[in-house]
Length: 143
Image (cartoon, rainbow, N blue to C red; front, side, top):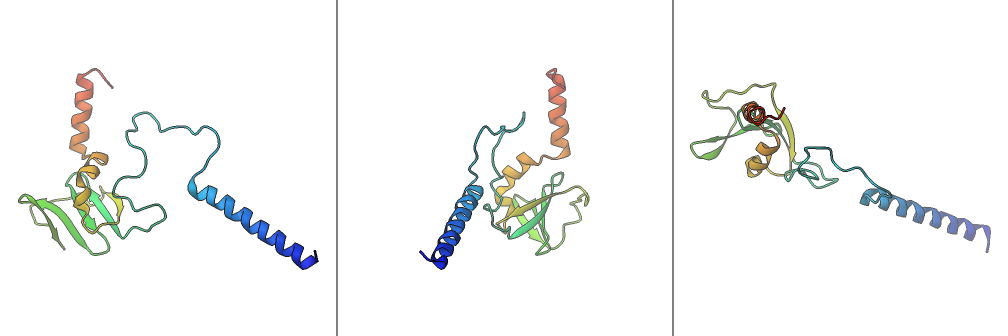
């Protein structure tokens, strides 16, 4: 074999090795024990509304847990529940007040964030819900 042939073989083997190791990294292959989630962690993996691994979210929302309102930053619209159905508007009715500094950022692949409202509310409860839960824990003797 000539030098060029040897060089081609080495380059091909190097590229093959890079591809193999890169595949292992992206597939999440690991060796040995990996610690599990901490105490109190109920669900594993990303929330149901999260974009697929490696995909970019199409919509970024500000979710206001105390008011249960979603604000789509890209489109400049609010989603809120009123009169038994979800409404969409560029402004909120005067009867709905939000604390503009108290929000959670959510990246979603949907233009209808309320489709995942039950899951969002479960993961991001309002302050009132947290207070109720803490009060019931104290009554049970838990701190």
